[in-house]
Image 1 (spheres, rainbow, N blue to C red):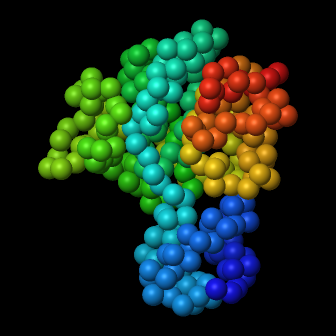
Image 2 (cartoon, one colour):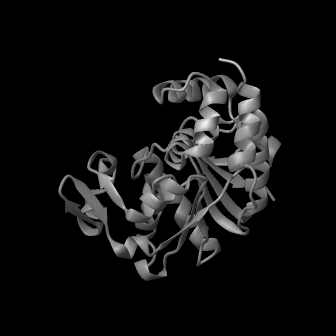
Image 3 (cartoon, rainbow, N blue to C red):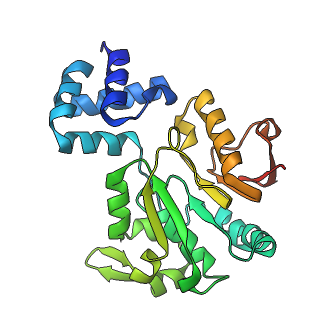
Length: 257
């Protein structure tokens, strides 16, 4: 299929998402699959459809941002977070600031709230959650999840904070109230400041090396002096000192001052 370069430029103008930051071979293949599935013959034809059909555009953004998540994903890493990382952060700053930077459909920020109930009353917990995909944020705010997405969650949390609704599970309003959702493009937008824990998992694997370097720099500036960056299980930082980080546990990196 031709015209991918032109398609990238058009998409950037239309929705302000720069596909040059994504690994080209992987992303191009994903988009080709999507446009074929929707009955379009090439990138130019598909772009005309995206401009005129909001539902098609929403589907494109949702597919582009790869919203795959679950509660307590990679459970052993959450155990490290609760046993080691949170206590250390709380010792340095009683009221820690936590940011779920690619929150998808809400499983991650809601997991963070539940994990923080080990240390604070629920009414005192606030987690910032951001994502580039407005549709994913709307799903997160709805808070309705499949049984499969809850498999890694400690049983006590499931019983306390979820109600079964037919074949799904509805998260409690008390947990929802502890999360503030905002739309944010990690590559283009300004980051919050003085954050004690930034969680960015299973996102950077789709980005080019240049995009990753940009993110490491922005995360460094966003963290507090003792802040921690928590990455996904396929995203260990090679030579973290190059980006002014040092590993404190596997997948957890401390900001070097």
